[in-house]
Amino acid sequence: MTTAVAPARSAEPAAPDPVAMFASMVLIRVFEERMMELRTAGEVIGPVHPYVGQEAIAVGVCAALTQADSLVSHYRGHGHAIARGVDLDALTAELFGRAAGLCGGKAAALISDSRTNLLMSSGIVGAGVPVAAGAAMAAQVRGEPAVSVAFIGDGALGSGAVHETLTIAAVQRLPLVLVCEHNGYQAGNRTEEVYPEVSLLRLAEAHRVRAVGIDGNDVAAVATAAHDAVRLARGGGGPTFIEARTYLTRFHLQFERPSPEVRPSDEMAAWRARDPIDTARQSPPLRDRLSDADVEAIWERARERVERAVETARSSPWPAPEEAATHVWAEEP
Image (cartoon, rainbow, N blue to C red; front, side, top):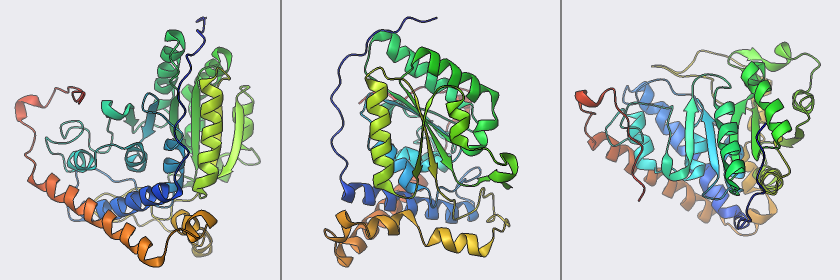
């Protein structure tokens, strides 16, 4: 068993700015919608797993992190990357398969970025959780105050690696936060058909891991829960499992054409009425600070920023054939 070293003290991140979080959610939404259009047009390489409807989770969690903290994503990871501050030009170029991409155009959606400590995105369900735990253990052994966060979907709780990691994290009191984006579906399977009468929180609690359930469409609630979990982990208090209930208001997966999957219309309408961006806009911090013109300006800046990234990606060269089997982390600035 590894002997933990008491973590050094670290400056906490500044209190999240509601306007900045709102703008980040808008940027993610605009980016996702545009990437789906470009996938249909054949410019984006590989499949697109939309993040539309879940933006509050990525933004709220990343608002609780410092630069030294690590992040592990999954195949629906564009929102996590943008919320973490990944360069939008490089992210877009990667989705276009171009040499200027984060991973030289070789990873498509399954990106990594050393500048922001985004360790990996994985198309294998649950595979990133042991990686996040490894980063957490490394920080613990070194006595560093870094925390590691892994995003998973509810389907990842069917992975043995996830349960093994939860056990290890509890025993080792790792500075690890698992964020489960519980959107009610595992690909095309409804979650209650997979886990009838079983709370996801109980699955984490069975491993003696602190478990917290929140409204994943409320960015302020997400930021508060994430801040509490990160502070606890940073102080040696061990891991937390956060279940953020949300809904994917587009489809699970897009190849050349939008997915034909159909969800109940009343279910879709109920969740769209609780859209995280609209919810944030109507919250007291923003209702009093932003006029309708301010909000439109935020949307317009997001559209302009995404289009600049698209044009930059289009002008980037394709990777050289001789570099097809190589990859080097981007140099630190």
